[in-house]
Structures are given as C-alpha cells and as structure tokens.
Image 1 (cartoon, one colour):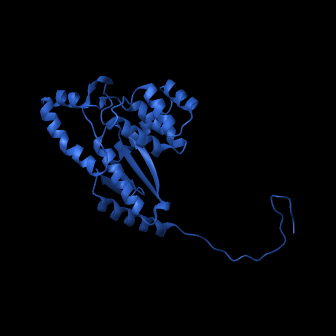
Image 2 (cartoon, rainbow, N blue to C red; image 1 turned 45 degrees about the vertical axis):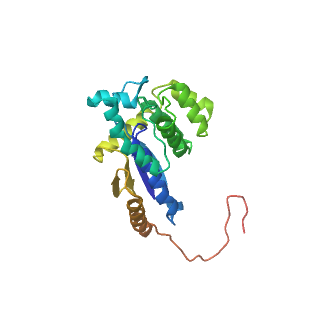
Image 3 (cartoon, rainbow, N blue to C red; image 1 turned 60 degrees about the horizontal axis):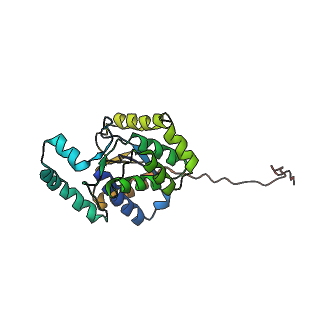
Length: 236
C-alpha cells in the first residue's frame, strides 16, 4: 500500500510530521506492506537563496516583527521538534530555494534512496544550518544518502534533469487541493494534513491498510499435470 507524502525542505512541520509518521509505521504490524513515496512541494517557489540571511531574519522581515518577537513565535515549533528528538536552530538555518533539492530527491527516489536523502536534507537545513541550494552541499548530502558521485554531479549540473518530476508532483498537489504541507495520502483514499499526533497516523494506517488488504486477491487454480516443455529446454 502506498503512502505518498508531500513535503518541502524548508517546512519545520514536515520534519516533525516525518518523525511522527515513522513512529506510527514502526509500530504497525503490517509495515512491510507499506511503500512510502516522497512527493515534492514548494512553499515559496520565488524564494531567492541567500546564505547570508537566517530564517529568523527573513521571517522577521516578511512579518514586520523584531528578531526577538520572531524567536518567541518560533519557540513553540522548536519545542515541538524537541519532543520528537529533533533540534531546530532557526538562527542558524539559512534562506534557500528548495527546487534543486527536490530535483535531487526525485533522482534519489529512482535509486531507492529517497527516504535517506529526505532525512539528510531536513537535518542539514534545520539542524546544521547548511545551504540546501548549494551544489557542494547537495553533493555531500547525496553521497551521504548512498548515491553515486558522478550521477549526483550530472543531476546538479543540468537544471532540466528531474525538473519535470518536481513540477508533476506540484501539479498533482494542486489537483488534490493540497495547500499546505506535510500532507499524507494513504492508498489514494485518505488524506492527513499536518504533523498530526501519533494516534492519528496509527488509526488511519490501520484503517487504510485493512481496506487495501481486502482488495488484494490471490488466485488459486487446480492443476492437472501433464507433459510440458520449460524455458530451460527441459521437456518431460
């Protein structure tokens, strides 16, 4: 059963939601039936990357707040993150457009490394304060996720590669009327918006899986054996 997750690198609730969903999934007895698919979403496609500007400073500028007011407003999110074992540093996090990170994520998905890269990107952005639109940083994170250096360099050097995949995810989100992230879609039937509590994920995983399981049928036929030839060249 597929669980599709629309998420953005710059979204603090996306990392929190990821952790809570992971906990629910680890407790789920049918977790081996679940395929997690990361989807791209950009909260602000117009963001201009500026590693000299912290997220705190940018938010203060946008809202017309003082830095102290901004830190106070961010404190509850930081506390939520701590509850999930995450450390956020908004004074350290820098303003970065996420499109190139999403392109690399789309490539990582084709290599079975989507989850590893997603984790690396979120940690780099919120904890390490790295510029996740920087080519050298993305190369480092790609290698950390287990991707081949030459392949990562190829993706990062050509802005057209996997751009369509990113835009397709964004368009699909619009079709589903997803206006905020994280957003979880279970078996294309149930949507969960936001970093919900653990119980919400657990209950909906169980519900969606039970319905999905009911649609999975196996066909058993009675066979009358006779002489046959096989692909390996044997006949008997």
